[in-house]
Image (cartoon, rainbow over all chains, first blue to last red; front, side):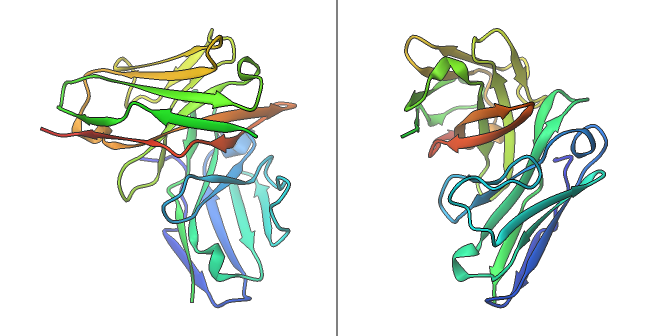
Length: 110
Length: 121
């Protein structure tokens, strides 16, 4: 059972925007940096966002991240069919001394 | 080019053991901490274990503590996961992942393709 909570699914039409929330606590999101991972069907996870809001090279600026208090948010604008995937937030939990992932969110492009 | 290639998965009976390996290339292996992350069929990601670059520090999820042991051989650029007393709930695709840390900000910048472990009688 994950300590980071995400909505099970979000959906929108092509070109629209979706946001995915990741709710935690002071021992994880509240005092550590959040990263986000995209997992396309049948593939390994891929880094999408690190340090709460930074994009690795090659990740389009349609993807954005933010953090406020004990929650983080991933935004995807200009939604494309290729964005259909599972998305996970992750961070270190200082109390547990373990890394923790969110429950995961499936993005569907209508 | 960074590459992480896992191996060693298979079918094992409950109570059995298995040793996973992850062969790394394309970066200075002993400069980076490494992790194991697993994903049960149709489920989300679950962090399993972490080992520091020099192998001196290790961390485990409560679900595997006392049963799994993470290790590395920096001379062979290889990461390992010794899994003992396996349970049906350990059935999953096991990924190795490279950690990158910059100014205290740490994240997984590369992942392998995974090796499947099935625990079944």
